[in-house]
Image (cartoon, rainbow, N blue to C red; front, side, top):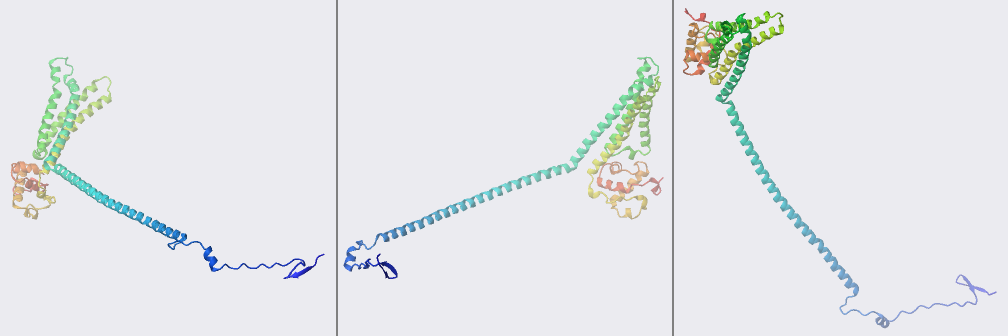
Length: 362
């Protein structure tokens, strides 16, 4: 068995020989120069060239964004310029549109003003009232004529009695209803014409108005009775026929009564259009509450007071009805001459005046 010895803390066989490694000596300067690589003539190595090339490339790369930024700035400037031009063009367009709208509004306003002026013109309004009056008159006359035509047969039957057909009495009986109708139509035409000119009989004829109205209603009532009487001669009275022969003539009576009244209203409305508003009194004075020479008359202008006295005298003499209209005063007291506004100013002052109020009246 081989022996071991301790060498440096290790047990190694005794027959193992220790080998010490000797360090390799550094080469000398001559060897270094001979082994060193050959240096370039310009003094730069490849690494330096690489660094310089990298720096140049970096510089070139840095320059590229600057050109893009300039291009972008140029694009933005062009966009701003185009936007400004578009804004100005839009503003001019809006301005022109506003001018057109304003011109259209001005034209529409002028047209509306012209139309309003035409509509409020006195002559235009009078024409409109005249047309509506004619329309109402046609309706009233249609009702009256149809009701009279409806009663004609029964009135003839009542007037003919038992006379044989085509006998003189039978033929003359056909003229009874037209006779009454002609009387009523004539009176209505007279009253309607006077009412159309603002001088209704109810204001100018005094007691005659009751006589005329009584004649009209009496004629229509007679036609109504003669129209109903034949219905009771039948063997069996049919009350629906009786009612029908009563209602239809009553419609004619109503038309005869209302026609002149409505025509008078239209005449007053048309005449009032031509009255100067400044000449109208602000309030109505009832002379029944004032003495004849009281402050109500003392404060009136001389020409109005003179016309008021003349109107009272005309009423007292029976030449003018009580409570006359302004148009009646203008026609009958002023003879249709002079300032019509004075007549319409006197009309409310004479309301309520009665002839017994005139001193010394006969």
